[in-house]
Length: 125
Image 1 (cartoon, rainbow, N blue to C red):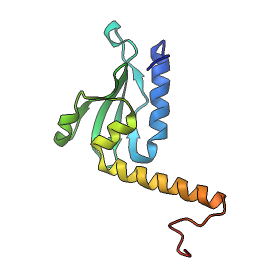
Image 2 (cartoon, rainbow, N blue to C red):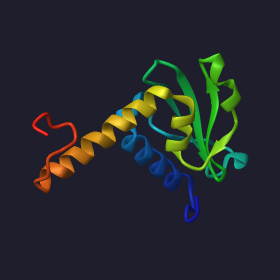
Image 3 (cartoon, rainbow, N blue to C red):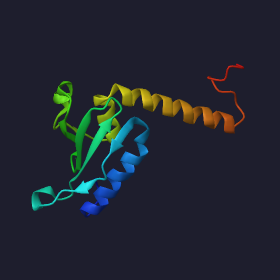
């Protein structure tokens, strides 16, 4: 979180990350700055994953951390910081991994079409 001087900067960064990952998240709350001196530069959001598991995620100087979950099988990931939101989501959600793969395939196919190259998913190949 280098370069962040206040909670609003962190809040904005978290919101951008969530928007960039919305293809693999069912829903999320607007990130909110946690109040209190001990929570300086700490922001949280509640995410509903594609498999309807609800997780609370915080962003602070350590990275992205899942602080609560509705799924017992994810307990091993509680309070474990991840450098990137992508890394956290890949660890806790197989459905996110599938959605990310489909999103990447779609972007690559669009790029290939824009360059006039047939895509791997093109049945005429």
